[in-house]
Image (tube, rainbow, N blue to C red; front, side):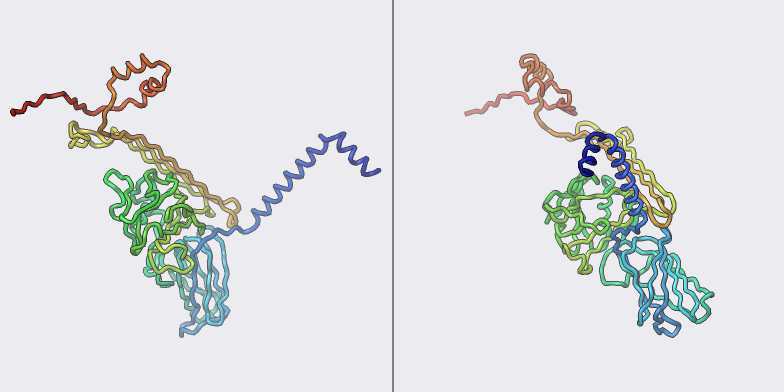
Length: 407
């Protein structure tokens, strides 16, 4: 009877149950979101820091405490040295850090301005001096290490400042890959700025539409490898095309890129998906302080200089009639200080240009005759559309002629 009564009440009063179910769903979703926000979220970063803690005689100091602090997010990691005095931190994002080493009977060593590059290992050995732990020694960790000694790879890291200052075509940060050691890409752009295949090129080719290219196969070669052998990673995730090798299906905008690490040869086995260049991009993230950027490029035909050598046939001086607008913006900051951060970026690109070609075109009289005699037809619709009317720079009229030859 209880079961029957309960079932009857549900059928008779369905509207009373819906608000309760909705409330349970909303409160459950809010609790789940709060739970996720409270948990630590880790991006797939590949930089690492390792070294050995030694005393003034060069002997290892076991069980020393090494604390690593991210200067931007204030995130803290702690490691304890092993019997050989070694410590290690992995999965670190690029940026500036401070490193503090402490041990019983030794002064505290504080290493500041310690820079880590994207997806790159770095070794930093620490020497502790005898004394009380309340005493400290401060050492500058060098903003940029002069020599990468953690492995034998050949490459470089391009940071966001270089990306924003160096000129690129279509605001594509991949264009700067040609500046890395061991990378060649000469002749991959024509005089008009269009992408050109390298001699061993194949596939979709390089980008002619900036970061909006669907499959962007940057025309570069690493240590003689084909460009189809290049490998693209964004935040530790492969963005390689499944159809064309060496093509990236994600081209991040310049405001979103924190650093680009390019390795041309002698890379680690974990990067062995492809044998060419290893391009590893780390996007920007929010920090413990609010920050943002804004970029705009205005290119108008009236601002361009005149080409005195003339147009396609050299008849008249011309001006490059391109209208281009590029803009980008970014914003990042804390949601929960020292725990949860946000970062968003946006980019846009528009262009309008006129191209020149040599071809036979219909005269206005011919167009008018077709429209008048084929009203409502396909031919009239095509020839009557304003967008198909060409802009004629110069006309060449061919006249019939007669040739006399003496027999």
